[in-house]
Length: 172
Image (cartoon, rainbow, N blue to C red; front, side, top):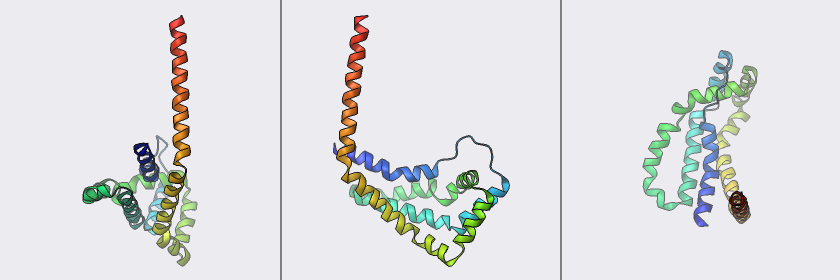
């Protein structure tokens, strides 16, 4: 049971980063103007520091959850620097933004993030991610029993279903 809980918690914590890192599915190439605005938006958002801070928060949360991994911190940091850094993700992120937003929408977002209020939002984003991650982790842990019970019930249902279809196959 503990292994299942740890696996699910790790999955829920890692999912947002995995999703952000995923390249878009086979979709038409983004408009060059949208790509240009996407790159500008990522720069205005200081995405390099945002990603770095997000990875630090994720690393700290993982190591808090699993202190036995502390001895591998430098290995994990090197891995994330190679595969999850802004340099590694910039082009796929530009494509994602350019696919999801128009050039005009990104121009407006860049204008906002260039204001003092926008800069305040960006400065507080790592802390907000940390608090959101902690909230999500608490929610999952507080309700893990419900998820485990539902998984066990589904296992029982599937086993019963498999048993019934196996019995039906034998009677033929």
